[in-house]
Image (tube, rainbow over all chains, first blue to last red; front, side, top):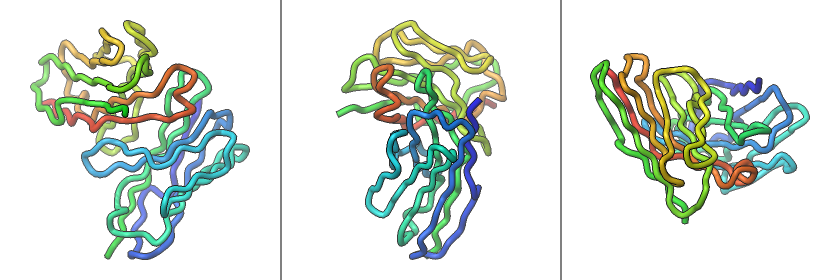
Length: 112
Length: 116
């Protein structure tokens, strides 16, 4: 059974820092990996989607990498801002049924 | 463009009362549809998924049920709510079976359910 782990569970940084969020999964046979952002009491907003054949995806200050063989992905946030404060969730799609398995999330706080 | 609507946004229901949460998708045909629950302090748990009308798969045993009476409508129901049913319920969709994993998931804004 696929298991997804995110480290750290919580992170507090001053504004302007570059930071890395980590995601690991136990079964490397994935279709793709998706990073989401969730603000308190809100739904999930998709940030980046990496296909299993890709190594990384970039959107603005965000860069996500995928090392499928080692079962790892990282989300890099450059020049963090207070508006980046949220919970970041990593999820992988299974081989069958296209269902997502989520990590527990990293709760990020960027202090002004 | 594709949009997903979920309602209500918040709901407070007494124990033993029925439940009906609705989710609709616009701008696509034959989507995969999903219900997830996020309990306080816990991760997202897949409850149901559907690859077509009246085709529902349940991932966890519970007193909830799901139905898909129309292609782009997904309903989460319960005949009698329990306290443990409290949580944040999220509907999601992906495109055609086999293509969903390629194009990712889109989530609704969620329903905060409190059972009292």
